[in-house]
Image (tube, rainbow, N blue to C red; front, side, top):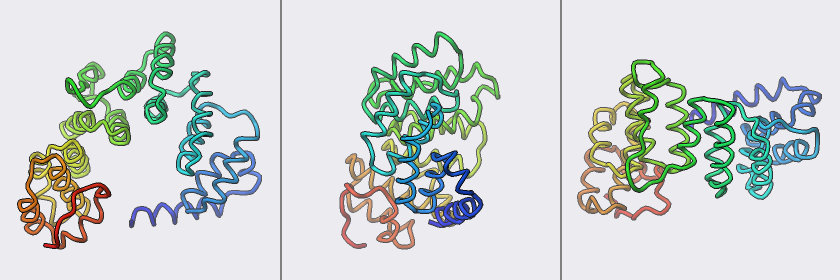
Length: 276
């Protein structure tokens, strides 16, 4: 919540310095800023300007797609996604985002053809990662990132690429892949943030045991760790690997107020616990 307030404050600062001329020349950027400060009406207006104005680059289209998805304009978002797929002039750093969007809109077949076409004209680890996100499954063999070993950086793969893979896997609900990426991030740098990401991926993947072991030393000092801990307990309940009485004991023992902590999780469809 604090982070979102900081983002909004930054967005308002940016918005105050953007001229009308700049916004009309860059309606996608104007829409992004409007969304950041919670002005959905303004975001819709600028998205409409972007839709009806000059031809957009594929990079602008991808940003506009994300805005339209946030505005629940899925039909328009899909139209732009098809235009991107036909064009193919996508910057390397946008390929993973493109793969996530194509999965979201059920365009895996179109996306596979696009990535195959792109692979004939360029070679990039971002392209390889995008294809992996596009085709990965939650069943069968655990996804591998062994190909990153060829890229150097101590055999763990570039940090920015790993973070992008991790974030995309979380968004696409490819939680086993997220665990693999997070494990490599921790091996690269055993920082608090990397351990938090690792624990979150484990919790979402249903590996509550490993998640608990990582989170317990962090519970007193990290609100995010406490929130993920609650999610891990709920995930274990849903998976049937933990009984309600055991879950209550875990929550009572490690969270200052379990009833509050649970509100921060993903518990819309989670089993309900009696007050503890």
